Image 1 (cartoon, one colour):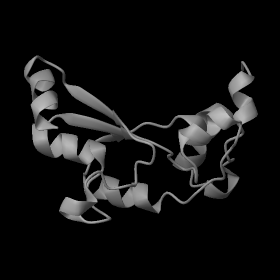
Image 2 (tube, one colour):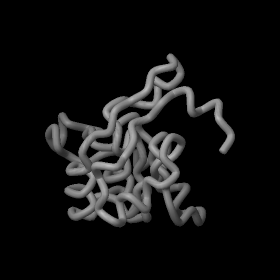
Image 3 (cartoon, helix red, strand yellow):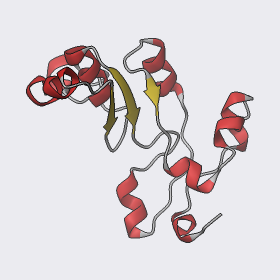
Length: 128
């Protein structure tokens, strides 16, 4: 990873957006265990750059299911909170959760986790 990320950082890239199917999955569990660093965590560790993690935030399914017309239910944010508290990565990006629920950030900010909606694949075809 260092071999292809470090040249980007040295060329002036100041933030790395590291997408994976599920942000809570360790990128190299054989090195640091099942709860080890994710892709963004390794990118930050190897380069020192600011990183953004993304992948199934708040949902129990990965993005591939959307292409099969399948949705996803909400899932707890405990893993996100733990990883953010460990400063594994700097920012989190939210994708499909926002497609179905544009008020997702406000609900999170006000602690209304019970009001979050799951992802409905049909919402991809909606322009709101």
